[in-house]
Image (tube, rainbow, N blue to C red):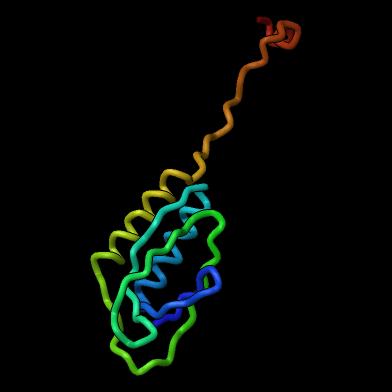
Length: 116
């Protein structure tokens, strides 16, 4: 389990979920975008609930290990969705690398030495 600290508050969620959320938040920030994500969590009374988290360029999230006697929250579908969205954002925002093009010098005076 991980404790996610967000906007002066915190909630408990599964480790894989927390790490996928952080990766998605980073990708959104790099893209200059924001999104709302529903995350399964443990409420203070120990019952399960959902947290709606707005993540984007100004989000400050911290996930720390939580030593609690509760079963790990797992949601493989959510984790895969967050990771897929993260990969998509990173592909869209990765810089395109192009090789420099050597352009011929068009000034005729430089070609005279070659008999052109």
